[in-house]
Length: 503
Ligand SMILES: [Zn+2]
Image 1 (cartoon, rainbow, N blue to C red):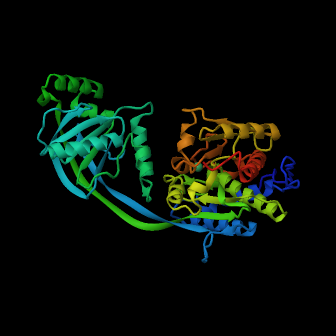
Image 2: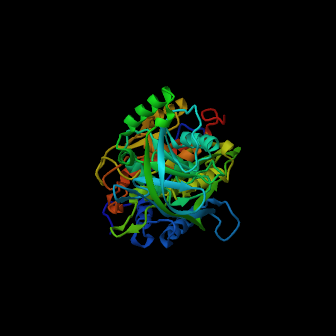
Image 3: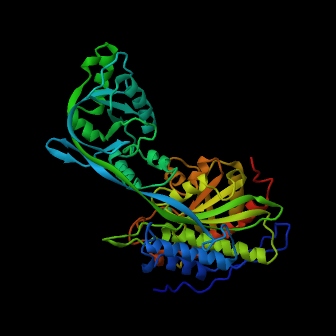
């Protein structure tokens, strides 16, 4: 289906503030829309890794990079591809039996073991909570149940406890956050399906609920993680009551009075890894006198694939951002061809496997093509295709720009807003409202490596992660305006060493 708004728009941006000759650049709404419609078409099947549709999307983007005249990163038959080894991990299941019912692993509880484990057992489970035990309790066949703020803390305690008690079995409860623990377990279960090198943080990040692979331990520990509901039905007491009782027992040195119940479980736990490959698509424009410094422009191209509900087109998430990467690449290439100099090198990246845990970008920061220390800024686009304006309706395009707290960035964005018509960037570090955006997309692995970064997006909507995220719902004029603004910012980032110095 061809929407009617796709009449070619020729917008010219004048950057007379810059020392070089006035710069005239074509930005094409028609081209941007074409890219979104192609990436979000039936034949690309929702661009999920691993699928033929995903590979087609990567090939299409590489083709556009070639046409735009970007330099490739490899000298082989796939010169724009950074190959990512992917461990496809499938895990077996552990069942626990409570109130005569089977509880579901990954939903009600989770089970982790560093080794495959097959057994069926009933063991006493002893609640310790967050108390520090003064006397030694013999481990043997007892499950020690501890409480902690997060998985990392809990695992450190378990490491110590396993030494002093010789115990192999542990259970963890995490003190409740505002979000329901249950839904986080589901999230974590889903995000843990693909494991990439270095992506363990992602697994840990969401582990209010599930601890998948005990990374710290060489020992063969078996670790459960419970929702509060499971804890309640195990002991017939709430986590809060249990904590109070545990405190009392420890204070009065009556540690043998710690609450004990029985846990019956059976396990058919195994982990199977198959190594597959995914791709980041990368091309660049070499800078002039500061060519060893780089600015990265990026967005992920993968999405959720298809299910019985249909194809997840992911037009906004993130065909819009991928189209943004391609169009900005074309604009910069055009400028370069017209004799405009970019002092710093501009690197354009369409990241793979974002939806399964920022895996493409985590891989990149561990295997950077351009040194991270020389990376001045990352501009990430994730879902920039929707705005309050209806498609075809004129108005001010609105986009959030969320990133590391930076005076310079704040100033630059403010200046940009004054300079540009029809676009407003909201520079926001308005935590916690924007926190999911801060952690939730491909700029974040860079932030963790102390590379300044911004993510641009036009916010969540009802079609988010649904089969209804379709290309005809994108506001192409707003998207065009956002890219105009980003282009101006990009020129500034590429050419102003005093404003954006390497630390
Ligand atoms: Zn996305």
